[in-house]
Image (cartoon, rainbow, N blue to C red; front, side):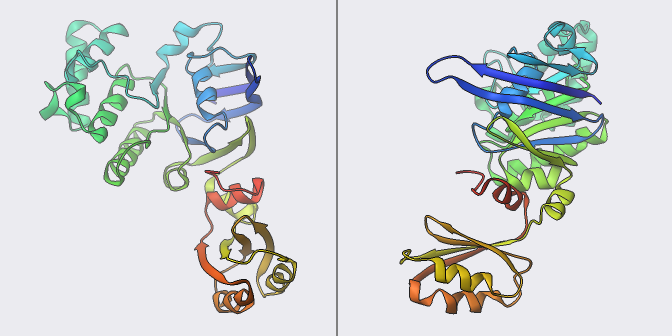
Length: 313
């Protein structure tokens, strides 16, 4: 394993006292794309911060490429590339210089740093912007430069913390293609996200975290299968008193596995979407049905089944 997390706990003392990560155990195999998935405040960024030596754990041990990140942080950083949530490019340096000085910081000679920087400009299609400054770049181009800089010293593991945050759909798709290309080069990628489609699209392995604890850890396909990820019907009602008869009626429909009340009406889980919609409409008529949304099985379905709430709640 390229990343081994054993009993990681991070507590922020204060009023109130916050347990950001709670006895977390996790392993990431070499060469894969691993996703740490969860809502805002779940402990994703704190976990990445400890793994990348930016925060010290309260308890536990983290090894990256066999190096203890607390005992030997400087050595660990040689194996680590980091793209944080926020733009950390040096605004006083050009695109080329941001890459060049990063290479120099990690020990490359002048000529090696120039060659490596030129390679990265070509790889990330930034040659035409080499003399531009970070503030002149779009969000998508800045993200490309952040990733290029993070891998300039050829780390074993690239950590991406919410890499799609703030990107438009086109830039997000371009970023996904870049991550796949890095994976094909043999770089292990660990990313945090609260975008279901991002984890489903990119990751070979996904761990869902909530309140600082790992709920499940498996491939997206197996998670959706083994946890009974099903089609979800969100039924919004204007009248929401005495929902028990409606819930009982919906539960009796063929293929329905569960129905639960929500603040807007009811949430129904079914094995498929075939033929259920008309029956739901008829059953909910006396409750002044206002809307029905249908969600096909996704990782968000898994999260809802585990926690009883939406990922972004």
